[in-house]
Length: 322
Image (cartoon, rainbow, N blue to C red; front, side, top):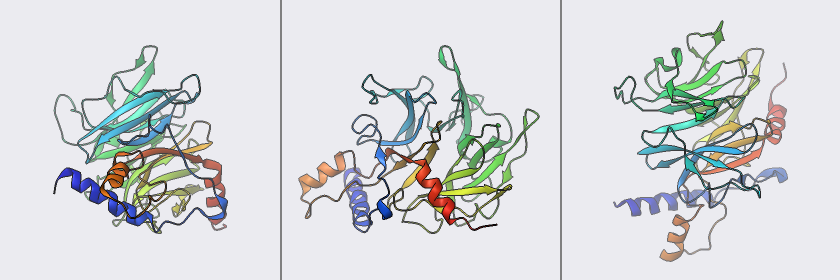
């Protein structure tokens, strides 16, 4: 099968799934697409995160399926829109993915398969760059136990420096781990346990709230699910992580919804979705179908944001009492 025919087939399968998608219940707000036609395009965008001052958007684009990931930045224009993206100074050569900012915006963590010590190890490790007066520093592999495993594909950092990350170090799927910062040194990675991790579930993203009160999770195979990767939330109650709750049909769809971030002002969930916005007129002829595939809403990734307060209030209402 040609690449073009395969892409058309994938779009048609996703479209059929979309036809069974119900509208968000209870008058919930609709997710807002970010920079349509400029940031969110017919290409595959994912991993959006915004600087604390709200003036710079960081994200990535991929060449499906997984041939290359490149990190970008876009700046606010005078009219408040997002300007044309540019490749970050340290990206564009290796598969750089999952950019996550520290709460103060001074450090960016990302996963990359770039060589370590001049040796291509064919694994993803967590790297970091620091903000300087001249821009981002040169990447360095994050020291400590985070990178002790096979592949590490997502890492976020709490305000106290604790790291939460996803890894395939157990040899199967991807699970969530934590490495605490104690006395300036990162401690051994902790498997966060059966409430979050299960052999039947692949969790590729885990974004920690700055105060560690909750965690946003992107998983395949976790139930209940709307079909593909869904977004979930787990609350920290006295050091114990609760069962992850699906964020519901306002955020999740039968297509892939993933890569969550929390804005610095704590007002927005940023995430990636491969959703179609509305069903096209049927029946589709070749011209209208190709127009769908080449458009912004073509079942490749786009960046969205959604009011975080809506999510937290709805999820807390479902948490059982003590």
